[in-house]
Length: 122
Image (tube, rainbow, N blue to C red; front, side, top):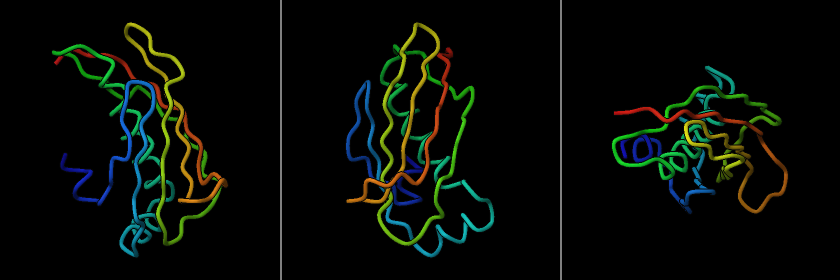
């Protein structure tokens, strides 16, 4: 998986209703965030939801992102950032996932997002 490897994202857990990813934030990641606020949280949230959503569609189909509503709650800093994505609704054609990012061993959320995905034929 190109994006995951390129950015150093680790898949901790993946299932049809929950996906957990983690990323050790480096100075390079923080520079990306300084150029475009929210890009790291959005990328992690969308990726986690997409992994889970694609486990819910049959062969020959894929889940494409329809929309993302992201709320950045805190600025990023060096450390291990974890995203937990949970399915809210898995319909025949549309899925809704909710993702929360936080630092490892912390209960304080860094961002909250809702991701809507649609089944498409590939």
